[in-house]
Length: 305
Length: 257
Image 1 (cartoon, rainbow over the protein chains, first blue to last red):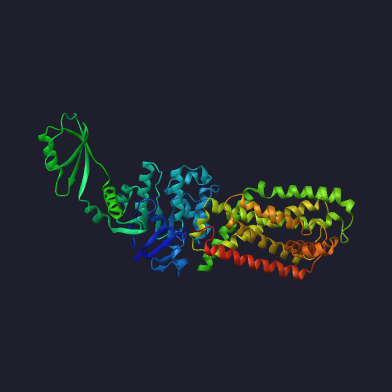
Image 2: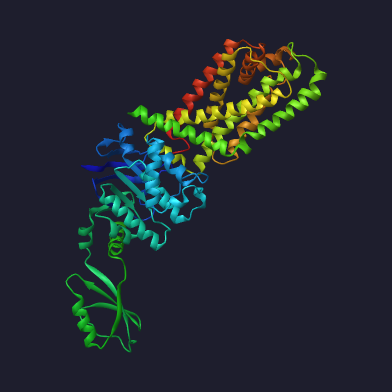
């Protein structure tokens, strides 16, 4: 079953900007799907159309088989949205915001209060349930939007940059929460600028650029296409001269660091042997870029050229 | 199934809207009571006795229905325009737009909120009026129906203003430049019989004249205009503004990209 199916979706804004040039996308039920792209690529426009906040210029959107144009109520009932920008009343309490959202989806106040307690507790907002939303920190506001999006228990949850501006600890706890609800059966579509986030959470991925989908595949397959990775090695003793590391493409950014690009047909053992021969002692190593980030940049460069 | 969802959504909007103006009652309920007290003191008690009777009633009795109606008009309009524009400005209108509720339900919820505030303020102002004059209702059904219809009409006006408004200044343009002059020239303080014939004819193009006079007829039993015509005019305006509001919401004017 397809949780989301997009056919030939187009959007041209009043100022003539063609944000979407006829994209096709499919998200299977139970998937944790990443929609990535640089700023202005068309991600938020796509999400805006799916959630009925942006009027499309052409194409079709189906949510669990329901046509968004002809079976609007059924399709909308299945979607929960966590938008990029804070969009709740600054004067209402957390509880009011979540319960009212349930009401808009036909959830009775009694049931909505019960569910609100569940999600506010899970997201660490229960103690602040009666506080006006404007008093929450940025991270808590984002969590409140997640609780609000879940109040009608949607089958498809769409998160548009849910962890933007959220500190590392809070981000990781949100990841765990999202993994749990995905495991419980909710299909999730995520857009993010944190490629580590997408790599960590998502099973499948689409990359959008300049209004076109330029890649749409599984995360595993996409990462396997990475032909090389760049590692940074921190040294125990400063280098006195440029080392000899035959077969390896490397640079020396400073006397305490060596940057090496390792192709898929090479391995780290060979590199460490070369280091030993040169009398180089390594204290630590790390990836220069996140793997997905590396691929992402290459794909965008390829598309733009 | 859908009907149940719509009803729950409608109830939610109404609870939210009523809760909003009750939460800020010092800004929404008290000011009309104070300003109407001043009207009654100045025009009713100080100037009124010098004017004498109007259509067989003391001046304060004569202006009381108009002042109550003025409060209802201003407050039903103000409630919807400020709430709708606030929702648009803070973007929480999106909470409703993403939900499976049709626009007529959203419209109905906001209108009911406008009626609730119009009626609440109308009751408070009536209580204030009772300190200055005796009021008795001559035609109950006319009083109730004209209050509700007028509130609906100006709530719709508030929605349309809220849709077009781009900044907070825009929501005070219509009340200041259109609503207030029309109310003051709508027979709140005088009978149009006092005007020269030409200005009487001009006044008949003012829709608020019909609301004020229909309400006055409901309370005092006197009117400058035909009551049936008043109901027809208000009903026609409601239908027109409802269709415009629904069209604007359906096309996403000012709220969707």
